[in-house]
Amino acid sequence: MPRALSDDLRMRSVLLYGLNHSKGDIAVRLGMSSRSVLRFARRYYERRDVCADKPGRPAGSYSLSQQEQAVLMQELLGHPEKTLSELCRHVEGVCGARLPVSTLHDYFRRNGITRKMLKRIPYQRCEEDRINYWSVVSQFNPAMFVFLDECGFDKRISRRFGYSFRGYRAQTQRWYGNWGPRITAIPVICTEGIIDLSIRRGNTNEEKFLEFVNENLIPNLQPFDGINPLSVVVMGEHSRHIRFC
Image 1 (cartoon, one colour):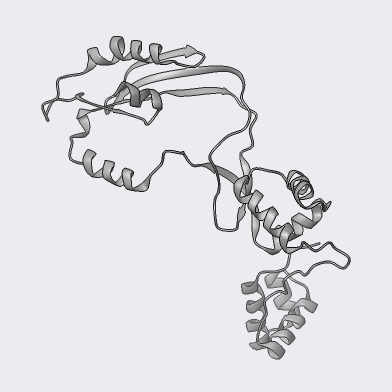
Image 2: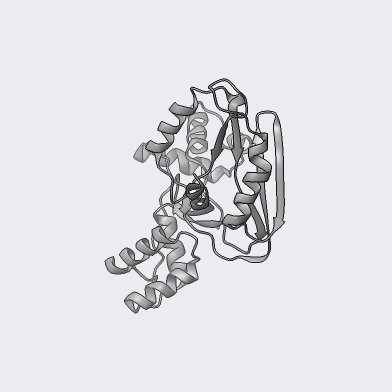
C-alpha cells in the first residue's frame, strides 16, 4: 500500500487550486493524480483540514487487552532489543494469549514505536558527578593531563537495534553475545598524542594492569606542582582503576 502524501503537499495543492490553477497542472507540478487534487480541495472546503486519516485497526484483527498491553510495554521498556516474535512469546508465557506478529507490528505503529539503533547507557553514569568533574578539570592546563584507559575488541554477534517511541533513543545497559578472540589495548595518551601502548590477547587482570602502570606509565610522569605537564593521570571508573587509586 503506498504511503499517504504529506500534509504540507496536500495543502499546497489546495492553495494552487484556490488560485485557479488547473487540476492537471497541479498534478504534474506536485506529482499526484488529478483526482487527488480534487479530493484534497473538497476535503478542505468541507472540513477545513487536509490531514490524512490515521489507519485504524483492520477488520477481524486481534485487540490487546489492558493486561497484555501492560505486560508488553513492561517487557519492551526493559528489553528494547527483543524482536516482535520474542515479545509475542513473552506475552503468551505471562498472559496465555498467542498473538500474531502482525498484531504487535500494528500496535507499535499506532502508538509511535519504531525500531532504531540502540544506545548503551553505563551503569555508573551520574550527571551530578559529571558536572562536578568538569568544574574541577577545567581549572588545570590541558598539557598536565595523561589519560589511561583500557579498550577491548572481539567478534560480537549482538543486537544493535531495538524498539522505542518515536523521537526517543532505544537505550540498554548490556550487549548480548561474545564470541571470538578478545584483544585488549591499554594506551597512555596526552595532548601531544600516544605516549605508550600495550596490546595483548585476552582480558587484562589487575596484575597486568599494575605492571603496565609501573613500567610504562609512571616513568613518563612528572611531579605535580600545578604547572608541570604530564602530572595529572585521568582514568575511567573501572573497578580495577578504583582499587588501584
